Image (cartoon, rainbow, N blue to C red):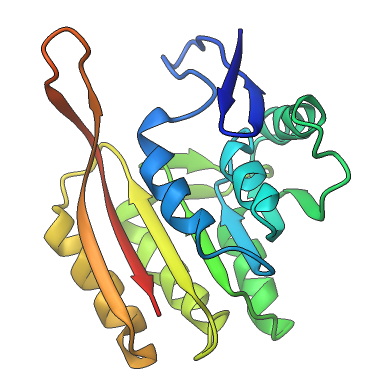
Length: 209
């Protein structure tokens, strides 16, 4: 089915993994980043089907979208066409997030903003293994090297982990604290319509200047 997030249109459907092709609880994070993304170079790691990339691109950002799944990246390109954003400056990359980020560090690239939404476990396009508890800290360390005193934000969201928002927030604070700015952390949720209950879904931590 088709769905809409502001000016962005995308395909949404049930998958065998009980996903919808997008994560509705990301909407507040997208809104927060959108306000900070005009004329910005942004890296979206684990970018999935590109809804976040398209929202930030529509806000004036220049995106590098990275996901290990060719199917997801092709879905992102299709969503760009559906949204009338196919000509926007978005590089669609099928790649392992950690390897791509390490190469960007060696290239001495910099970004104004970084969004990463890693799974608890996953595999890269050539069989690379991702385990959140082992690989998140080194990846954040490389992300720090892609930001500088003129950068604007980093947003990290994590699902289905036994770590608290306090722990994730402290990891971000220790990694990016030398840049100054502010670190926030908390829970993400969706609202149950019948009774208005907030159902927790994930945790986030974000750094901003």
